Length: 454
Image 1 (spheres, rainbow, N blue to C red):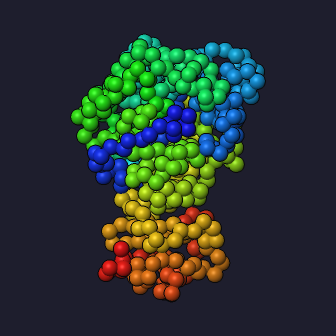
Image 2: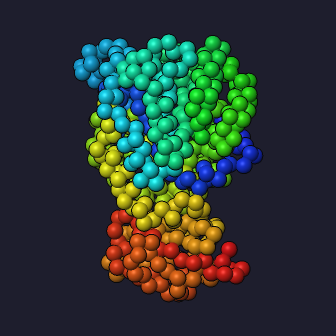
Image 3: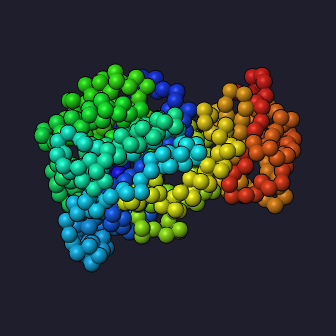
């Protein structure tokens, strides 16, 4: 993952093909970054992409999945860590030490489903070039022949679909530090000239692997990263035609060097301008890394309340949230990541109807607020939903809305607790006990009928 370097400077011709309703209604997906990098599981937790100075990003990269690159930058903390802890040994040693012996895909997916995720997107090949299936051209450098010695993608696809969720595949098309051109990336400007694999041989290699993913697993989401080899761009129209013929309700992301997109993406704080598109998705980790980083502490991680608020904020603005988990090398989900998903699951028990299948309120219909209180809005065909947190001790909050938008007499909390609402000149005044909790409460209103209801 490194969205800023190769996608934000390119145009994004969004397809005029209708985006399938399953994707626009899903709102929440789970990303999975799991690989040989989960063995060292180490990075500096410096900050979020888009909020860290690009001049220092690569030598102090918070993404543990970039360990192979970062550990080769002399003078970087990762280089020193690799020297002192791992003796500077070859990166591929980690593939053989990655056993996944406790991996239980059904357990993972049960948690994802209870948390309200509607789709799951694991990495099939990250920038290190190690495939999590028996990918053509990889010979034995994949998880079927080494390390876990199993087709991890098949295992996940089966578990995901058994729970009725949609299954996607992440593939690093633009970077492959093994099969493609290999150079240590020390600065963003070096990616295109030295880091990306643009040769015809690699373009054919990547094309063959993505077609194999499509034919084997029929992914509902085709999620590429870091663009596509220059000498393979002419192959993409045929690849997309094959994909849509194989998966008619599939969707394609935007990270193909401007070739095509069903929806746009942002990553942490980078690419936020894409969040004004008709269809978009924000991705980020529970912490500052996608791959598991044992060097992160609680101060670097979302807690359940902040994760729920992030989800609600994204959905209220018309996007999907693709929240990443980074499993440990043994196949277990780190306890702190599992706790976040359990917190989301507990909240979703009462509030999922305000998230799934919802859409934003019309511009100007209601005013969101960021603190004292925190307020966001969604709607469906008949109702508006106000998400409320950090409400003053009085239990009262003024919802600033367009006059006549809501019917105050229908106000009801989705967890079944009492709420009183009355129309006032600026909107609706809501009064209820226990509205001040960090996790948002949700108050549902019937949309008033007539022209003013929007």
